[in-house]
Length: 282
Length: 267
Image: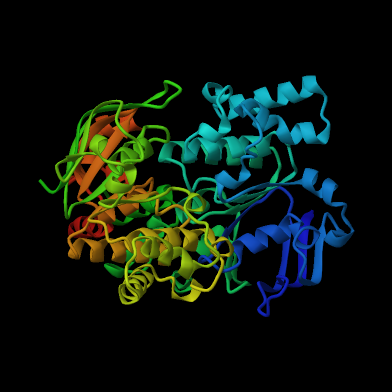
């Protein structure tokens, strides 16, 4: 089933001449993880705003074409209902933290509180998320006093608590150390296993290679490349679109130059290790 | 001595939370240093001690031989420029050009000097196309370069970049790499906090590792990434090329792709 479909979608922000998004066509299937990549300024964050209905419900401007969310035109969705359907994790965790709550626990509960969730259920859900994200040590702390990486994990927790079917995640690990990054991706994987649809904007293509089912590449507001993660991330033309190839793919290409061509270019660590073992016999 | 020197430095926040313990360190003018470690290890607190935003609870911090305790933060920051982790903490003017010029007017520099400095830092950070925009309207990654430009315009001998790689694309990483090279050529000292291990391997020879409020290692990138002990204690990862080399059982403590390709081609 398609959860979101785009048909000839173009968009201009108010008071601007240039299109921020142009002629987008794509059918996103329920339960898949989509990696969204592209150079800065290519339209990734605007694309996220479109997917979660902030365009046109919050951002005015000029939207043409059809955005169908579960078959229904985004313009006809009630924006409150939409926010319970689609969760959004901001790029900058400093923006997401409300600043009005005194403890991490209350911060995570804020969204549920606004939905009018019963106190008992609210506490249960917050505790569940706290355990999942290993935030036990932080729950009594003031969110404003946390480090950048800790804030990012709390921001993530406050959205997970909402239990949305669709999650739009804009660079969830930009401020995180390698171990916390791995933990966040383990959770993204878990959400995927729960059947959630995930849109993931991420510069770390090594991680996109491991976790996405399909990849969309944006350039100047257009989809310039899309398809299976393997096809997209092994395409050397990505470099011209301002996107790095995974380390594994670069290694695979380098090994290929030194010898005959591989059938496929590896994009993940395990793939390239296998490839090298077969080639060199180490 | 022209250096940043930390002697037995500890720091606790007013609420009693201890963030740094017994830091000992000398970073000389002209050096290029990466600081790595887990979130909450005390990296940002430590660099704020270097530019006078934090004053040590115990021990002393010397900038070119002068104790930061004997100076105001403004006096210390004339030597040590600091680019905040969150660019929004550092921005308040109505356009990017004004933002960069703001401190230069405050320092009462003449118009010609202001123009020279602004054009230099705009070129270094590649933000030519954004000068007339409101800083809050430019993308996060560019906003980061705006704050870097603001600090570089002060022409301090020491510059601290707090997670400049966060949210940067291929072009942004290349701009940062060129920036580091240029600043080093000019004899500046650049101290960079980052979680990007590939960026560390590619750009830094000296790596300071922090864990649990302390400095646990101060070594080359290669030695740092091939020390199982350091990686475990600071919960770091090797650059992926290092991990691949390890799993293949290759010798030579590899951290670069070309090293691995050369070795494999010999097989």
